[in-house]
Image (cartoon, rainbow, N blue to C red; front, side, top):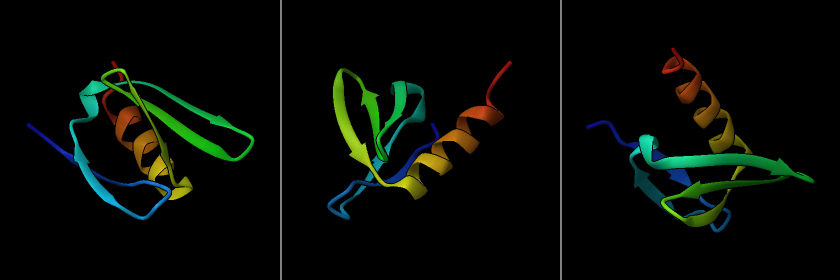
Length: 59
């Protein structure tokens, strides 16, 4: 199983399974992901990493 390292807006590092992400959105400069029913605010850099990672898994 592959895990990704993300940083939230408070600078706390989390390790998650990217297959558990159900939504990503960017509203007014705020980046939000939905991870197993919980919403997390993340940094712009982390959002870019997610996009790259998820794009590489598209069919």
